[in-house]
Length: 200
Image 1 (cartoon, rainbow, N blue to C red):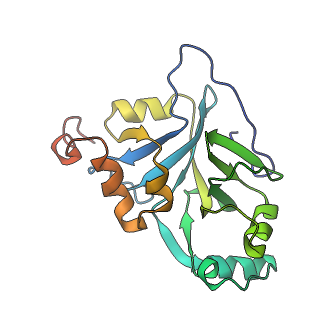
Image 2 (cartoon, rainbow, N blue to C red):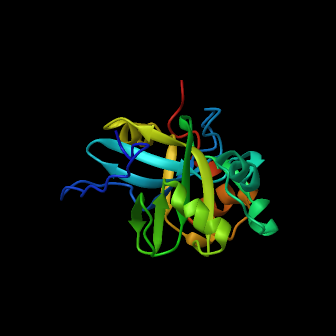
Image 3 (cartoon, rainbow, N blue to C red):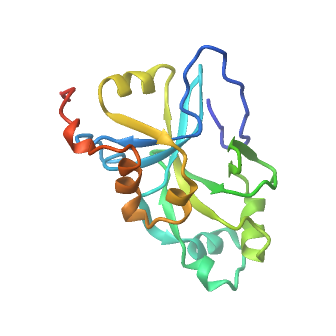
């Protein structure tokens, strides 16, 4: 299993393989899956064992303060407390993942690309509440994962496009604008290619 609940495991890609780690996965307009429709997913890990990602544009009816209350973490920072929590995907739905831009390491931190990491341990939340956490972050509950070869096949089936990570999309763009902004970064209108490969 990629990035298990108790420990994020770093693995090295084999030479000659094309992996999507460090990319944003953009749902094609025709993708009707209720979890991934018009979604943008940060690919955190992709190798021969499969693919693991966190969706970054699907806020749920829960803010960070509500999560802090459940974890008995106290924060007086109203700006942080009101930040939304995102639905990271349909897997491990009660597991929290913090996407952040700090070079600091916490108990369970995995580096995605230069200056961007994901942490799946409570200690980063304590630091966020205390004002000693990363400058930029978003918090998800749940994750998305694909079996070996599944992501590659879904791309061939015209379900997804991908683009390089842009931290401005992750941290400085409104959640409702992230899909369009990511799609626009490709330099063409994705609606024109949404029907090239049909979906059953």
